Length: 121
Length: 121
DNA sequence: CCTCAGAATGAGAACTATTCTCATTTTTAG
DNA sequence: CTAAAAATGAGAATAGTTCTCATTCTGAGG
Image (cartoon, rainbow over all chains, first blue to last red; front, side, top):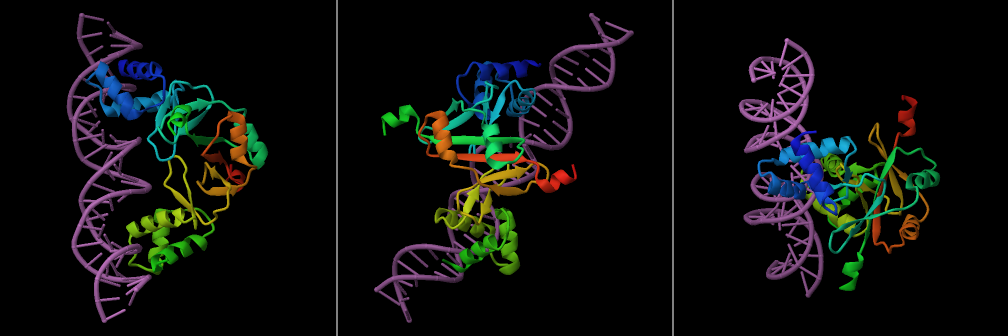
């Protein structure tokens, strides 16, 4: 694990939310101004492969990265754009039972208006 | 509805599958070589807005367009890349019940190996 | 403490899918 | 038939990400 990889991992682990590569890059630069965007992308890929972080893909948005690698789902607030974690039962099993297919995986993202945004509706 | 819109709609409706903008563009050009890619994109947007076709968004892939606007889910074959339709129960209701949230919508795409690809496993 | 092969890096070019711009053409309503 | 509105073609622009490649770092074996 190189210095840069540790830095990136640390940035992700000390932030309570889901960050884009760009955001991670900005925070890394505050600590180590020499780091390049390519290195951030490269290492996000490596860290994801190694299972140390998770990639959160949402249609029409840049990729986000999640420090939590435990299985869970995501909800996106349509107003403020924040991503939140939610847990549901065994979705894969449910989908397999519903479709009658043997699935490799699935992508799911739900959309709502988060509680804070609902206050100012 | 302009000539081009009819052409695009026709191309989508006479193809049994999920096409990308590029594929739709190619087929349109065979019939009307003058049509431009911008027109295809523009009209795919309009036709989708009007509910005449549906957009199928899959992470890491260009958008696909679906002639069927009835609610259904999609499975992507990891081998051949083909997209198939599947129907499941009321997924939104299920997700709302599971999460306890009031959802606006959700995106779901499942991954598997399709029957044809399994034969040559 | 050296050394050198392999890995990682920085900078920017390249790429893909899509949207935008704007001058021109087509369509539509009256 | 005409004027206003809508649609079009061509190509530039954009966003997010990956790729290239010359340079730098690292660490295992001497």
